[in-house]
Image (cartoon, one colour):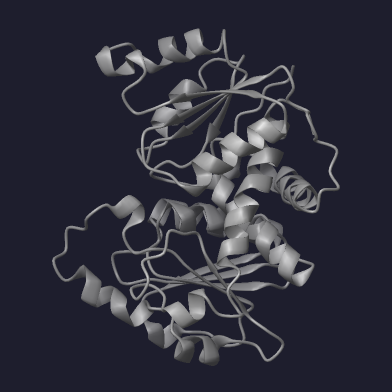
Length: 311
């Protein structure tokens, strides 16, 4: 069995990313050849942080693919009593074929689990990146428009791990454009922005970031936002909420930026209604946010199969 880790989208390259997006869409349309492709395999689900969509998507997706499942909570492994991550990974690799990990901590922890080569490791969100979310994002966009080239995505709000993953995904998709507009001090980290910009230049995509709504473009294809407190974590600045209010997605904003031919709204969920987006947009005809959530399972299935070379 060939084992592949999915730690960051920057590691897999444009060709593999395109294949994952296309396979995810095929699974969503029930025309892929992955059915029961993980029969006889065992998938571990290790989530140290809360999750509704991602944990459910990987669990149910693995079941659909025929795998056995074992779940671990934040205090279940002996890492909590002092065992090293490489030792834990070495032991688990004797039982599991794939381990799906959510930490919301630096990616170095997830990388430590990948120190062995028998068990595939999937980053289901770290502090730095949420790679499987970005795959689901591209699947949703391609389903809506039929293509990804020439698509312009406007991302509003915090430059968090979902935004970083989206930047890496867009930067490896020829012809795509991502405009990030975030409050000063809350945008994409400079390292992530530089990496995405370099990849974009190589692949014929465009990544740009601005601070302030005076840079708001018009005629975009996609408006994307996330909740302003990633994983509900508090912010240091006492006035942070007031600084984010201009970035709220409202009907007026959608009217200004939308194309006559149609612009869709995306949100990785959960949404804090009335903060980053108003109800009439989240529940309105332009919203694909809940379809996007469903694509987390088709994307999870494509990634699970890819990790053990079953697709």
